[in-house]
Image (cartoon, rainbow, N blue to C red; front, side):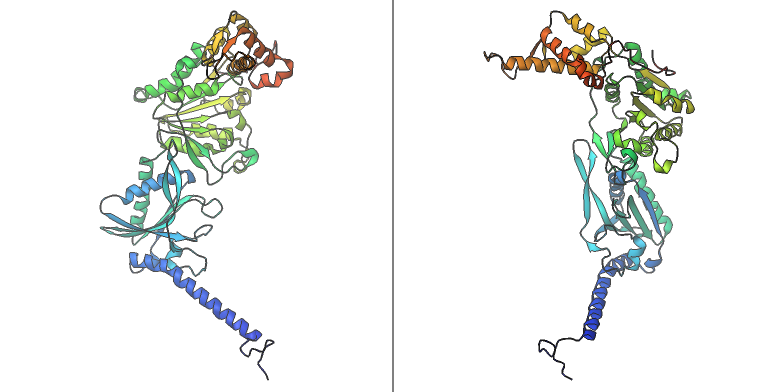
Length: 501
């Protein structure tokens, strides 16, 4: 029988040879992969000593937004006197489900984790874009006077099995490994980068109507606002009542506690859109330096439990829930039939009596909240109605929002009379439109006398033209969006119990 193949090559393999060679090649690949993978196991076993493969492994987890604090705690613990460490990076860790136990045994998987460079991520650690490098996946080999440990640190992986921050520890004694994790957790709280800052959630959104954040949600830093008291245009009794409940309790926390009085408080600011609820909250936050603030708005309203957890940990603190009526009927799948608002109220009720936590809620629709609040009495202890500005308030708002405009008005009372029933937002937009009318008029002035960088001069005619635009029936939707009421229609406010006069 001639073994020459179709091309006349006597060395060409037959079909049986191809299968045999393929199996041989596969065995060589698997063997090489096992030898490479078990290098991690050998490193761990050499470090930990005999019997390491049978040592108990303990684990602690943290939410994704705490990754930067876990790194802070871990670095502080590693830097303590009498402790040395070596870090070994891992590759091929993404979307892989493994732990220290698997690393100690040595994975035969060709695409399993291997020793390599240390993967890190730059995460925010302060306002102004400040970041720090956080380890995504690495093994720490630790040597102490009383023994050796190994840690596996893993960051969150949105598309993999690791959706939290995790540290696993192994040592000859389970108690020693657990103490190490406890120390890292304690130091992470002590050195928490969110303490005394203003933060809000950011991340991947999912869930019904957009409420809730994905497992990779992080906290971003906000600048603390600087709003002066004279820039808050409210009736004195209303503002005094809000300040007493929010700022007064903060200033007198120690004597109140010494007298057996609780510190937690819930304040609801309600009123028509544009009456200054968010502006008032910004003023209050500027008066609370050093207080940790968590802001919930929009899609982040689903992060109620996480926000309250941060507030409990980093007291004194405040949780801001903007447009709380949006969750009055919103239900998350894991919550059954209970709206998110009930979860918020339960979180407020679950705080200890001495918890120095302020809840500031805002809403345009207090009527949607009344039933829920009636079923959960005592959570909100002060409700303040922010009214539409009266004539005196409208004059103050014009002065506040004119900026560097030169107001040259012969009959300012005419504008005040025509703006009855409008909001602060309406006044602000009115002045901007009047400035635009003045700018357009100046642009048609062929004399060229006015320089472009000089403040605009606004007259009665400019204000009247702008007001005519906003009050025109064709601009009714714009007027309503700015908080203006329809002619002769008084603003509707529910008979909310306990509201400020």
